[in-house]
Image (tube, rainbow, N blue to C red; front, side, top):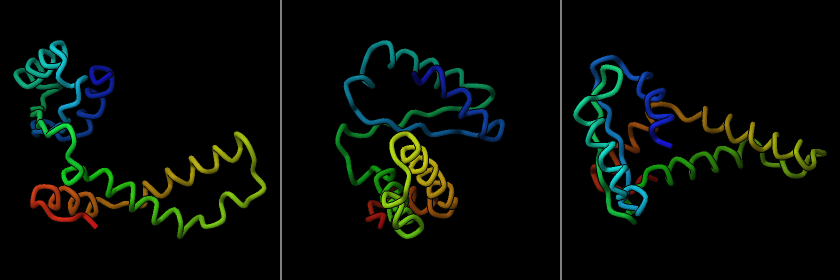
Length: 128
């Protein structure tokens, strides 16, 4: 799965930059094939960018800034779309409306927010 989408994501970073890819110690991440692939990526890079793999423990909620990002999205969602489920939409139309609203709330998170999440993880601070 990573082989399929990682090169496209990496091309969004400036040429010559170093990108840190963080994964936990889940069983699928420890597979021999995955480890071998990551060793090749770290040695060769992808599309002129260096990729460094950062391993975290299997369960490390204090090092999981995505939970904080989703909490922020949820907070925005509740403020911007308080009555979304009470609307006249049902079934697939409601699913699409909720999906679009969630994407909109995600897009409202600015780069400063993600910078603060990264700092909070490395400084071992609460990301709230």
